[in-house]
Image (cartoon, rainbow, N blue to C red; front, side):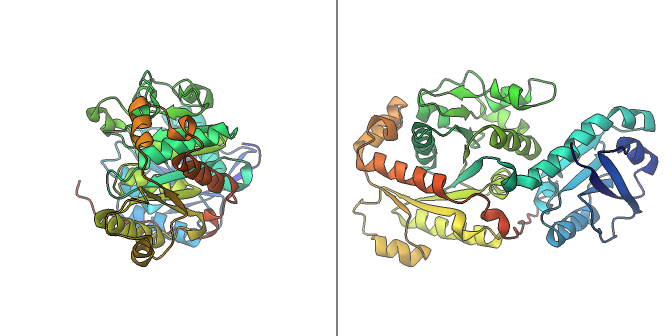
Length: 394
């Protein structure tokens, strides 16, 4: 941290204020502007709001949501004691950018020993919110609310096209249980994000780099876990940290997602600069994509940073492009035609954008790459995002 960060702490009665003071010992780089006892307070101006509670609860969630609505650019960090009891997703969906879990019991001496780790978290939160103006790379999230629409095909070919154009690009496979990015790129899962998670120690850019798998195009990939049972260990807070580091070291980060608005997908969309909505010419796909656009609108996502790609766009199935426009309410930005070379390229693990660049399919993916590369950075963040709330039993 270079400049001084003003911290406001709001805590409940279950948290010892002396512990928080030891955890956030002030100096020239960190200044505590106040401690407020009780989660019902309105948060005044500060660089970072710290919400500290014995366990995440409705009051903490309400305070976080209110603080984010009031000042979307100000990061909110949640500090809890003991296990977060399954409320990690709810905390992030409420608007927290990071969570610090203290051991229980936690006394002043132990809090002092954890001070460096917490200070790093606060600095990272401020840097994350600085975002678009700090030179970080773009982050493109692939959304296809119906399975089989071609998200992975689009993600891998976009990565290959951007790499061919000289961009440093990495694909993150967020389909944690059944991800196919490695298969589509012909990459063996020598290292995966599960290996990164379980490697131990703190994470930084150098460590993360060692777990990326290189593709001959120059693109890189962070692959999904090898087995579905490993997916449950991947948390939203871990993924957020990964995105920050990848955007700091690459021109473009592409996130391939499962066909659902899971907490992981919502967190990725919220952290992104661009979204690519992927559909096919069938009624179920178009219906789900329409719902996907409506969901992004509910989140307050800037329409100017959403691209719409239609796969198998020339297939004769009784649905025309006029029908697509009538259903979705917009014209596709990119039309990818049916091409048997696409299927062959997937089976061979070589993106069609590289193997058959001059084909209509190859040209379509390069068009998408140009749209992403030329889009102004940070437009999505100028419109306040509204976070979706989910009711979940625990």
